[in-house]
Picture 1 (cartoon, rainbow, N blue to C red):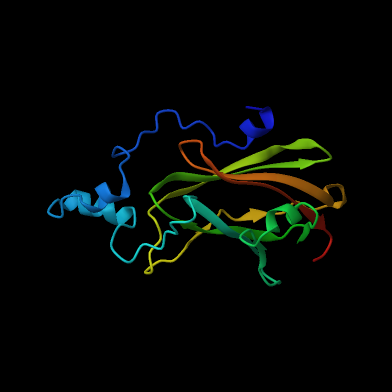
Picture 2: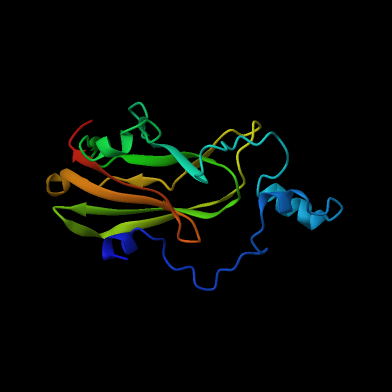
Length: 200
């Protein structure tokens, strides 16, 4: 594995152990109805009914649909990751972030076929080919059951961030991002860019 690929993996969760051994979706659904703790565990995973929306023709477990940036004073910026060719065009079309503003990113995604354990969003920010100090971030998204007609997708809002300000920080930044689970399976990896500017 190259250093670039290792950068896009979550930090090592040494000592982290699943509270229950990993089982198939069918096994989770057949767990003893009379056991209150198992009922709470099933509910925490979203195994509370509804029709499974998994596409038998699509083997992916996690489908990232979009990333959204929200900031006061402007409409949300949505990066559609589901349209054909959308990931390829991201790097060529940087979006602007006004210096000094506070913003929040969120991800919308679908889970199908099996329980997704410990999904992370990892990103590495570079400017002029150099990784910025503190430029790697690892956001835990969580564990999720396959989506149903009761909940057709999930949305995870990340921690609020503030864009740097000043003439020296203005310019274009390149970002390598990945969505990776606790088993180190990469569900989506893509490059994109943003520009810190004096104004929107």
